Each structure stands twice: as C-alpha cells, then as structure tokens.
Length: 135
Image 1 (cartoon, helix red, strand yellow):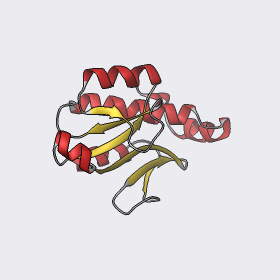
Image 2 (cartoon, rainbow, N blue to C red):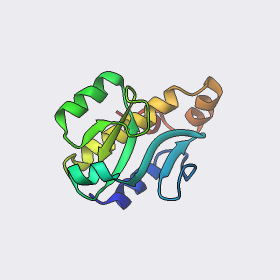
Image 3 (cartoon, one colour):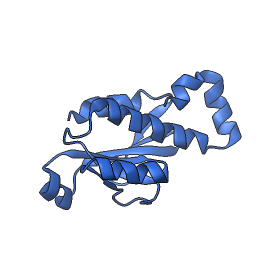
Image 4 (cartoon, rainbow, N blue to C red):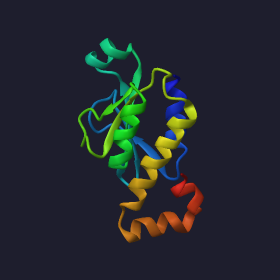
C-alpha cells in the first residue's frame, strides 16, 4: 500500500494539515488543531505479525471499530490511543483503498462533528456538507 497516496488523501481533506508533535517520523493529521489521523512506520510487533509496512490511526465509532477489527486482520485496537474510539490500520494491502478512504472520511467527520459550534461554523461556511461529512 502506497503510504504517499494515503498521506495525499489525508491532506486533501478541508483545512487538513500535517504536524509532528510526538516524533519526527509520526505524522499527525489535524483539522483546526484536532487530530483525525496519524501515519507512521509499523512498530516491531506489527512488523512481526504483518510485515514492514506503514500504519495509521483513525478515529472510529466504537461499534464500527469492533466490526472493522473482526473483518480485517490488519485493523487492530489503536496503538497508543483510546482503543474504544481509535483503530490502527496496517497498510499492507489487505484493506482496499476505497475502504481506507471511507475510514479516513469517517474519522475526519467524527472530529469535525466533535468541534465547538464556532469551529464547525467556520468550516461549514467555507466547505460543502459533502466535503466535511462524506460517508
């Protein structure tokens, strides 16, 4: 799975930007200073189980998070995140690109929906509902 295409898609979301607050090799994608994804190399355990691939963390509805973990071996409870609301996706090719895009869209939409009314209003004034809440 091409992590550069994933990065490009993450950054194509309205007002998305990349930050490196933890380590120089862990990209954190944000909108209005709120994290909606991370992108980094797999850790040692993930490399042993899935091979040397990139991984990303995405916010997810708790029920859907469990369902995705049941469907895809490369989707697990999030590494270093709240495991109820975040999943780690190993980018080893198991999850089709269309599904990855849907998961990214959902993560982004959940973060935007959780913003204050003022933060959301400025986004909603500049972008269509389809762009912000694509499902």
